[in-house]
Each structure stands twice: as structure tokens, then as C-alpha cells.
Image (cartoon, rainbow, N blue to C red; front, side, top):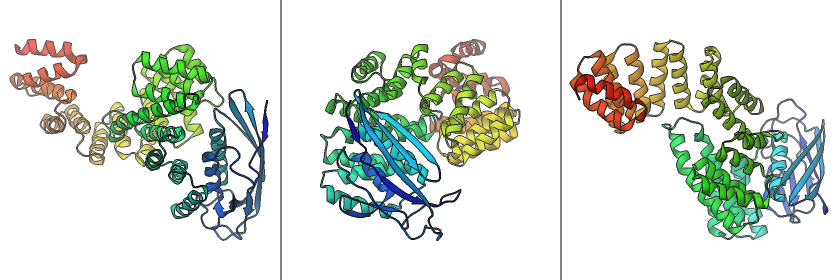
Length: 478
């Protein structure tokens, strides 16, 4: 086995305080390859981009004080090793400071291994450069390196670190346009698309983010396909393609062929295992995918959703709770857990989660709150929440439908019809609105002739109510 000394030896100063402020101009900086004053977070990002051997000697240039004006007192020293292990790499980092930490990451390529470790480091140091700082550093580094598209790729990495995948995708598209033969540009682009689509994949299909997720998923698929064409021996590219196909619902035989091709390169890739679980949907695939330490958050969310769909609320609750313990900000886990708690009639807990979700996803959070209040029997509270959801995302037929349906349940048929007709105007193929209008005309207003065209429309659009529609039409005489 070949062993190469790690090319990272960094001493970083951070505040010795329980909560670290965002550090900007006064942050610790480093000198790399003759460039002076590069923020530590940017140096970490550079390690994601550069190949082995490109970074030599990192020199600390400490600030006199932190952003808060307090003296900087805590010192962290990092050392580690890089080992080639089979077809992949193992990166081990030891950090010595106020406490001792040990991080390891195994990846198909060294850049990925270094990158994931650097993400952990950046998070631990709580260092966040400003966009202006990043732009200046990005231009300087690009000029120094002189590689086509490198500045755009570097900026894309910065946006990914900042959890802004849409902006990252813009820059990776630029990098791929300048240097289309570089597989890493397309792989980075696919990953950015996946993160952007993940914002909406957990949401009901009538929300804007969920609609965008379908569009972005197709772009993710194209970028991942390009990466495998340019780098057929790159396991990470095959893993990304397999995931993109699984999430886009690509037909089984095509997706299975990708799994086989990826397994020839590296059968132990986590993304490949996750894709296999989603594509095959069998117990062995899910068991193998979950046998990682720690399990992938996305897989835990999908497993929770799978259990929820099967009616196993206890198992779904366990998985969603595990994700929230790792990441309390996970919107997908928060949404899923709230639905589980609602089904278990744990309404106060579910309401608290819905209110939490509303802060960043107002339409989804209010809609979820409406479903919880309705399940709890609080129809007036549900009406208020559904009205707020429709106001947060105007022009959405499905949300206007919920406004109408909740009024029907309260016995206000006239106002309910106003909302339901509006829902059909916004979405002429919205079957639930047509069906509910037909039911109101037939059952509440006793106008079967008016009900008939709406029931016929619902029968064409909603296979699940086809039998009930047929029964109602027989009663009407049609």
C-alpha cells in the first residue's frame, strides 16, 4: 500500500468561547503557493478543487483580534495522513486544541475525501467569509492557477459550503462551459442540482419547490450522465448518476444497468447503495444501504417515508427523529415527523413542528398546520391555516381547493363552491376540486343536474373515485 504524507498542516486560531461569531476580515488567514491573506475557509475549499501535490506548505497569518474585538486565545493544530486504500483513498486528520478530535473520510477520489473533511473543519471553526472576500480571493487564485474555469468552480464550491446550491449550479455551469472536457465540472454540477432539488423533493407535488425539483432533477440527470461519459472509471460519477436516475424515476432496466456499471468500479459506494435501495425497493438493498456509520441522512429520510407510506408510524417516527437529532434544521425530517405525530394523534407536538417549518417554508408549513388542525377536529383553525397557505403561494389550484374543502366540512357550501370553482380555473385538470363540487351539488344543494358534468370530469381524472362516481351518476340518471 502506498502511503503519502498529508499535505495539510494548519494551525488556526478561534475564539475560546461557547458560541463563535461569524468571522470576516479579522479571521485567521493562510499563505498558499505565494498567495497571501487567504481566509482559512477558502483554503479549505481550495483543497476540494486541487489535485494531490498542488498545495505545499500552509503558513498561518493570525489576526490580532476577532470580529467581536476580543483577543483570540484558542489554538488548533491539524495533522494527518493520506493513504491509498484499494481503489479509493483514506484521509485521517487529528486536531489538537481545546479538545482532541479525530476525523476520517474514505472516498473514491482524494479530492472528495479532503473536501468532506474540510467541511467538518470549517463547521468546527465557525468561519464564514463574506462574498466580497471570496470574490477577491477567487480572482487572485484563478489568476495564480491559470486553469480554465477554475475560478467558477471555486466559487461554486463556496456557494455549496454556504448551502446555496442554486448559485453553486450557476457557477459550475460556467466552469463546464469553459472546460467541458473536465468530468469534475459536470459531477459538481450534478451534485449542486441534487442539493437544489432536495429542497422540494419531500414536499407535496403542488408546491412550487416540488415542481422545480422535477425540472432540476432532469438537469441533474444530464450532468451526471456527462460525468460518467468523460470519466467511466470514476465511481463517484456512477453513484451520482444512479441516484439521479432513482430520484427521477428512470425505468428499472436502465437504472439497473447503471448500478451494474457502478458496481464494477466500486460496489461499496454509499451513493450506489442508496440508489440500489430506491431502485430495487427490497429488504436486502435497504439493509445494506443502512449499514453505514453514521447512516446517510437522505437514506434515513427515504426510509422514514417508506415506513410512513406502509402505515408503520412507529418506524417512520424513529427514522425522522434520528435525522433531526443529526440535523435539527432538516425540513424533510420535520415535515415527515409532523405527519407521523398527527397520525398518532400527538397533535401539540405536530403543531410545534409545523410552526417551525413555517419559518422557512410558509406555504408548506401552513398547509401542514391545516391538516393537523383538521385531524384534531379544529376546523376553524384549519381554515385559518389553509387560507394562510394559499396566500403564501398564490395562484395554486390545490391550495385553493383546501380552502374550499374545509368550508364544505363546516357546512358553508356556497363559499366552498366559490373556492372550488376558482381552483378549477387555476388548474382545469384538478380532479379533487371537480369531485368535491359534484358532491356539494348532489348532496348539499340537491342539484343533481349541476353535479353531473363535474362528476364526469372527476371520473376521468381520478381513478380512485371511479366507483363512487359511477354510483352517483346512476342515481342522477347518467
